[in-house]
Length: 249
Length: 377
Image (cartoon, rainbow over all chains, first blue to last red; front, side, top):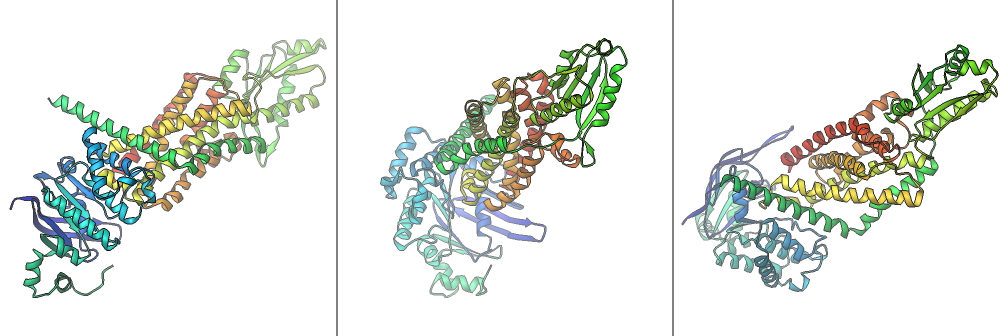
């Protein structure tokens, strides 16, 4: 398999007046092109920090990270052109309509006007929002916002999609719809990288899962192999086995 | 090839700044509840303060130009000095004496803001008094500062009525036309409104976008932080200029306020001044974690500006320590420049110092804003 993301000995330290926190501690892994890759871990495990580094929002303290062959520190703009990020917060402009939110993102990614118009119609239909295209998103339900947030992140047809907590707080119908959407994007050859707290989601959706704990990578394999390896019936058992029962802040 | 790439990159960044600016306009014009205070607040402020406030002055600079060739005027000149009222322990006027200046030269000194009033004693003063003929003294005042001017005129009238007898007449020409407190107030309220409006709306936009995560989403697209700031700044410049034009027109039409100077110079002052305010708004919002902390932090900067920079009363009427605070705030210089243009009708050379200082503030605050935005977001 050809790696599309290479993470080597990645460390990220946050220094404040009160403390020095190592959020990511010497982590090394690859993500292969075209796979659905899940990152799971308790709160404070370092998932969001890795996410922020891979999506060029923050820089590593040390180590080397390449996304599609581009260095995250030196070639961040090239990376931003080929990735789409679906944040956990829906991050939509509530006083713009659904269409205007999509146009804004399309314009910032410099998608040609005619292509963008076609894509907007196509994606709005895909997520069943075509009749809400000209409504302000401030009045949308959580599920509608999540669907719109997803298509805002793919309007420029990215190679890689980063998806933070895709189904947190959504009803079962919307969860199913989001999973279907993820599989569809994957079938088109896109690489998907998730973070999630739902073990069933990681189990059903992901080709491989990385389990993080206190900034370190403690396991990385297919869900099946992870279960086999620790003789567990579910991914949740594997997770508890590897990260402990202690409640994190 | 390299040159072509740079040109295309700049074009792309400018296009993205334009996209951000259009988004900002769409958002602001959809917040109808925000539009009302945006335009109504300064008008209400002008009306309430304009009709409701008075004030006193301290240490106001007055020049007495005594051209009298004889000695009769020396007693009256000395008496003016001893009759100056005090406010607490501070004298209301600080008097300087000179000789040989023409009325036009005296007007130039007032235009340049060197004195609030100049009393001209003619060369034939002693001669006419000796012949028992009436003599006219000319009192020129800076009526763009209506509070100081009103107090000086009232003092001089009372003084001459009580001490000089019927031979001495006082002529008080209106060098800027008939002016009221509203004329003094309006230019500064416009500057204040631009300052408040820009700091608040830039800051709220960034702090709000930070709180709901939209700014992060924008920054994950191939747009530079510079282009985001440029888009937001141009939006503010256009918005504040439109707002200032509307306010000046409303003040002229509804309140009869005077506009003696150039609209172009007003725009120039406001554009440079807005850069400071945008920079300050960005800087405060970049170090604020959310909207509430932005609100509290921004108050620290905006409220002192409101009361110390001579918006409602002349700078000379506030204590010295407060005046020193005023000199560290861009609004002080914007107020002065706006009054010099709108009330005194003066040109570029008279506001050059204010403009240079405002430019310095703009570079400092804008630089600080960009630096903190890049570091914190």
